[in-house]
Length: 544
Image: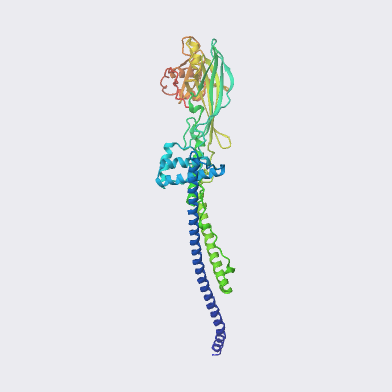
């Protein structure tokens, strides 16, 4: 009972304070209502002033138009023969400008496209750096502008909305490596000495922009191209291996084109983001004329001049306006932040995807062997055993990312120089101005060597220089001849070769003897006589 009386006493004591707060709130609401009413009066006053300003501007425009028409009439009078009106340079320019404006207005009103185009061209050409437009291209545009459907008075523009990164990227590479001639060879007593030269060319890996024939296993490849050249009768004769092609000397720029295509695609994506979020500045856009824009009119007023507004009402109005401005600014900043976040997300989507790195270990955590990332091919001269014949070996090495050799393979080619062969047989050599191909007579995967040099020793029971090797699991042998009227390179029958190997088995590797076990393979085909545009391939198809 005592606690209840205490609470009632406290409530009774608190009633006067609450009544005071309610009175103050009512007074504030009254002041706010007065402020709103005063603000509505200001809005009406602003509308009235804006209307008066528009009327004054309309009168000024009418006066200006009448003034220009007067100047245009004066320009006509000044051009009449015998006229006493002789304006000075400044006045004459004003008269001509007024006359041109009058003619332009009349041509627009009459929709005279030809006159409109002539006047607009004469007025705008000396004032802007626009490209020249042919007459037949400009007439439709002038007609559209005369009808009010064309663009503004800005001329044509050649600027691209975004950069094409492939614009100056060549479709093919044009390397000019230095040729190195490390050895000389004379294949016949009556034949000139020939120089054995090499030059290194690079072939990029295949991409979405194309492929290269000489990229081994789709890996970036550096290859030494062989050139054998000699001088005869004041002319230089040269033949290359592999066969001369445009792609051999000018590889397709696969990586460069793929890189620039990706960059162009990114630029296009960024451009679309800029347009979507109103960030794009058109380089061809004309400057907007903001003269006469009422939005720039300062409608501020001095609050001190409003004598009928009490101090309390003014303070309440200013507080309400400040709160409203703060809320509007906070909302604007939040909207800008959200828009900026969307814009950055759009730009992030333009970045190309990063390829995943290959795993370094297997499922059990054991390190995986390194994968080859490039190929290197080197060529050198082994021997020149017959007129116009050269034995050349090509080493193909697959390399890891650190340059360490992972795989290595040798291939030996028996090449024929067509010009030297022609001189040996007494025929006229081919045209010296044309770079010809070294004909591939035979190819071997492995050859018999003595230490590190190719062995040209004859097989047991035979005579003459011979080359013995393996091709596709079979033993092959070729006899070289320097006799007139004979083919400088003659293949031997597999059975005959195996029979000779078995006479001295310790002289030959075990792989050669194992290849002779069982049924002998078919006899080697006779060499194909190659013309100027083909290569004779007997022992195997050549992959340069």
